[in-house]
Image 1 (cartoon, rainbow, N blue to C red):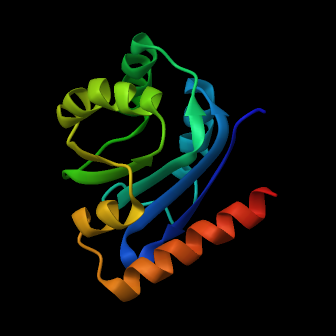
Image 2 (image 1 turned 135 degrees about the vertical axis):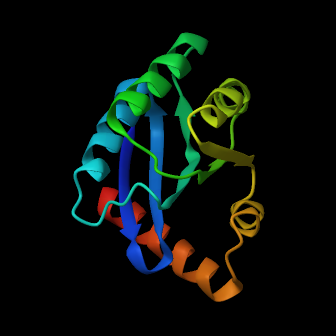
Length: 145
């Protein structure tokens, strides 16, 4: 199974949501980022929610550094942003343990979670906002079918 990824930007919530399923590699993530970086609703001050619960990372330690170099070369962050990452596999946990301290150097505060609720609580979204976010993720899943 190859990887599938998409995103939605919720300007009213100042949030970019990405969803990935299947086998995800560095190229998939870079392509996804390129798509939302050119979206008319993109704003570099928005927080990011990355949902990898249905994905398996096919990556190595060096890919994390390459991904951060890609971000550094393509994204100028005027302020610190939060990125909440929800995952379900140990390979993502390992990659996130490398990514988190390096991302902090780029003004990205990364939180990694096994539960969407924990992630959204960390990102400080109220219950009604969490419902809107979960609905947006479901709409991305339907789009990818």
